Image (tube, helix red, strand yellow):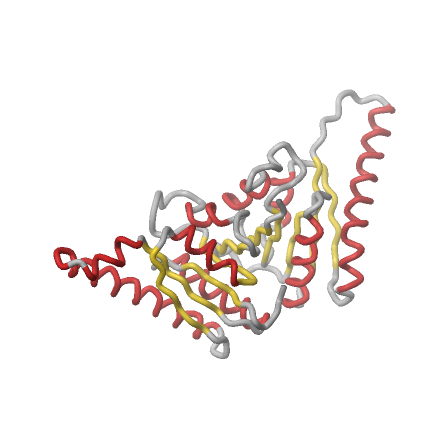
Length: 288
């Protein structure tokens, strides 16, 4: 997962969030000792306009603008991590398709939570939503936290078949950062009635969920003995529990699909909700 022949790819579009994504990618690359590739994508027809006489002036302006966006992002990478190798690419394609293709050569794909296009008031842009859960590598969606974060990585644990790769990634990220890892498992069940049997069943359910969390985390914990792990098992809606747990974290790590009714989609309901409403950078791993 972290071979030196791999790289971190970051998509930029000239927005402030794109530059923040480039800065985050630079810091991540520095920890991993990996190179960075900065990518700007625009429609093929726009690139071809520079060669089309009636529209050459507009086409050249668009190419020059793209070159400036790439140069600014490369400069931001070098500012954050001077020793990290960085290259840039201008691609002619829909940004989502271009980034998904670039992700095939990457360890990690990084994007900002929203960019210049679409509705600026939205919490998540179409590119971030379009690549999360579909890329062949983990996708980091970067947003600037409202306050300096604690040195904590939070991972959502749901017990689904694909969750082991999510937990492994979170342990590795915590080890890179020298961070504390909070493994959070939430379950949502209705309790009807208040009799002693119902209470006993509720307590047994809670104990079962705690055991599930401990068992899933144990294997990775042995491989990362220096990572301090805090296990948190909570009753409540998983999206809300994880949102609160990661409110001041450095990173939240999620699987793209869980074990609920939306598990067959590219993004499950929990990852979808947190991409929209989370307060810290989020890494989504495809678990389908």
